[in-house]
Amino acid sequence: MLLLLLGIVLLHIAGLVLLFVSTIVSVWISGETSTSDLWQNCSTISVGSHCDPGSAGEWIQAVQALMILSIIFSCLSLLLFFCQLFTLQKGGRFFLTGTFQILASLFVMSGAIIYTLMSPQWVPDTEAFGYSYILAWVAFPLALISGLIYVILRKRE
Amino acid sequence: MLTFVALASLLLLGIVPEQTEAISIYTGWERHALLGSDVRLSCSFFSWRGTSDDVTFSWTYRPDGSRDSISIFHYTSGQAYVDNKGPFRDRVEFVGNPGKRDGSILIKNLDYNDNGTFTCDAKNPPDIVGRPSSVRLLVFETVPIQAGVITGAIIGVVLGLLVLIVVIYYLMRFLVARRVFSLSVSKHGKKKREGTQARQASSLLSSRKPSPLPPPPLPPLLIRSITPSQTTTHATARVLSHAGAK
Image (cartoon, rainbow over all chains, first blue to last red; front, side, top):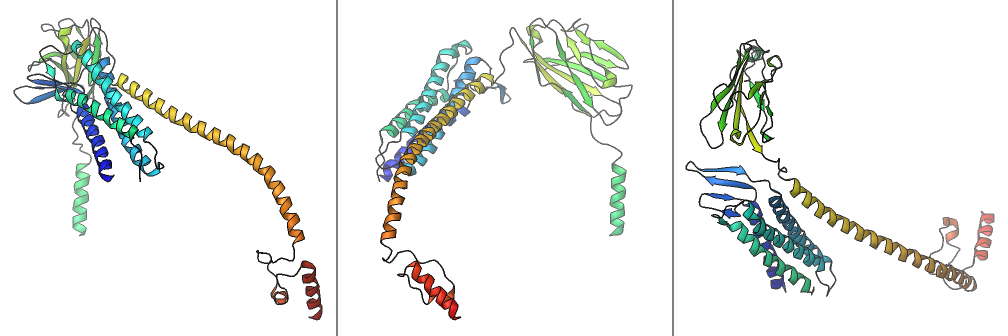
């Protein structure tokens, strides 16, 4: 039982860490000499790297908001899990925790989809997607699976 | 000790009137402007000395991506000298007030080539040590939405909805619980009233039975003589007889 609990919490925290890295590190697009999005565009000139504030288009702001919301909901879900662990009666299901985690995964998914569809508007064709973008896509199924496990799990003592 | 204090005070008195603060120059951080419009670049300074007659302002321009800067404006000895050979030929106008420490310039009819950094350097002799301040000019076809407005709006709306749902949920629970509670109280009230009446009747009939409750506290004179099984009439008779005897 304790092992199961530890595994579930580790899965949740892994998803949360991926979300944090994907949101904070600005490497959604990486070219040969520059990385850009979500917050700043950095280019490595011969002297060193020089960063400018990122473009302020509507779609980038929407993606920023969705990523931040997914982080908030995932953190809330972790908090709720520990609360419900102690207050739920025997045989009850972690519905609230699962709901918040599934909402977080939906936010990441919509953020990644919006970015995929709209980025050709401001990104030249020569540049490829960076690792932050990939981490966002990996965090989505992790969060979804974690949320489903919470919904299915029953509290035992 | 006293000499040390005297020396220290002399030192302080010597230093304070002579302000060694440098001149501070203030411009904006960034200016956004529409293509073809005019933009006012403001520059002002703060100096501990009064504004002298030899105050000078000079503006230099460095295009985006270039390392060289050229001078486009200079004000000295009450005369303003504008660019007459460079990229801002006939487009710069002095709109500042040197007496009020304002050295702002107006650039007319903007073009995309005007994107760059403008640096203002002001000198107020003898206060000439200072750091020039730069403002970045960005020319747009349509002024875009500021960074963070939509982000904040989306986050605020979603979190607000969450808070609203939580509040409504707890309000519903509270209202339903209160309804249920008031219903049960009215039912209980009827039962209680019937119950207490029955209890009173049974206690009157069975007064000889030893009551589980302790008797009310009496003065020490009477405690010896009164036992819990006796009725009230017997107790009062004993009290009267004892009082009479004393």
